Length: 208
View 1 (cartoon, one colour):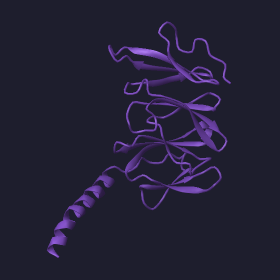
View 2 (cartoon, rainbow, N blue to C red; view 1 turned 120 degrees about the vertical axis):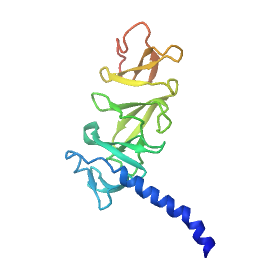
View 3 (cartoon, rainbow, N blue to C red; view 1 turned 90 degrees about the horizontal axis):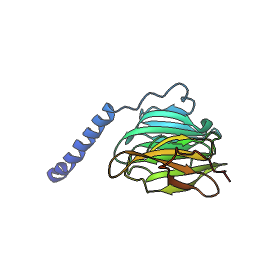
View 4 (cartoon, one colour; view 1 turned 45 degrees about the vertical axis):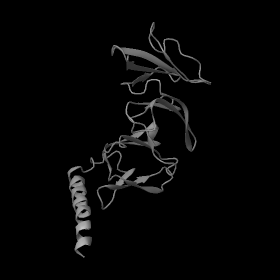
């Protein structure tokens, strides 16, 4: 019995530490505008997420503790920022397809003016994005149309959409650190290119 007790002590100590960490990192309060969508439960770290068809799914916030909640894309998507381990960051939940799995975008995605696309850039390895990625919003699903790791590991930023067919981005050069300008053209084919001699998206392509 003594041997078993000795083996259990580290586990009990770890559980106590986890309990202390939970108590010290409570989730951020749910804003009133989001409360109809994110419903608290008896456990402060678990939430019910309401899909647009009225069904609910349980969200586990124990290990990636929510720090903010925001409705995106006209309310179809729920964005949750979080802190915790290296796999924590920004989560996008499609309320039209709640069982499709959470999308980890690294940072908050930026939607096109018409809501047809969104783009995200990530500089760390805790997301489904390694550099820059673009998704198309379709009925009942989202489809990744483009991904590029050419700017991975840099402080790449999504600066803005210019219309609904071009995204302006910037990232520091690997040699001198000066910010370079890029554009992501969205059409039948999606292409990321540097724009050293002109402003990004100075002439927009035609979206297909």
